[in-house]
Length: 229
Ligand SMILES: NC(=O)c1ccc[n+]([C@@H]2O[C@H](COP(=O)([O-])OP(=O)(O)OC[C@H]3O[C@@H](n4cnc5c(N)ncnc54)[C@H](OP(=O)(O)O)[C@@H]3O)[C@@H](O)[C@H]2O)c1
Image (cartoon, rainbow, N blue to C red):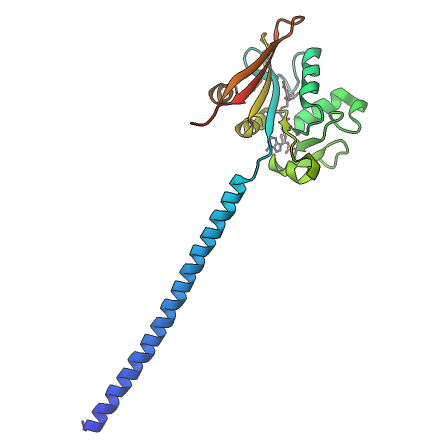
């Protein structure tokens, strides 16, 4: 092989190496840009999450009446009638939005009849969790606790939403609530649906308790969430 040919192949190799180097450099730069974008996206997501966590959250309260065994319903009905408890419920939830499951809605609707024509609970904005109810005129159907927010007027941003039952909603509601209003009836009614009493006793403390002189069986208790340590 002549000297000239040798020189030519060295130059070819160098050029090939140079091209390879340029290509690798481009790939590396693209990888680094993608990595920078991933980090920036993660940072933006973290900032959004922090903003959400720092946003003031809507206050949720749960209100229920239970018997001595923590039961709240039997055969799809409330198996007692204490007018003082109905008055307590009305007083506590007055002017506040209330969220209930479909069965509770139907039970109240049937009991109140024409009185519930405008709102299933008169003078309260009512929300019903249901996937099966068609349109109803005296309450708003929602998909979940948080969905209520979409139907709350701006000037009611400070109102507490009351979760009023039944079983699953009590469990879901109490995990987000800061206050639980629990009427305890010191009798047994052989209920078949139960309030999450164990969770309540573990995570909440009794802040206030009222007795009714006319009905010694009935106690009105207000529970507040314990501070997380
Ligand atoms: N003692 C008390 O303080 C008290 C309070 C309230 C109610 N009650 C009594 O409790 C009984 C009703 O309680 P319940 O547990 O059977 O029924 P409920 O909670 O009132 O209604 C359950 C229904 O709500 C709908 N739903 C949709 N999404 C849901 C979700 N994420 N969580 C919960 N429900 C959802 C479902 O109907 P779809 O199939 O339409 O989706 C579900 O079958 C009645 O007897 C009522 O009178 C007692």
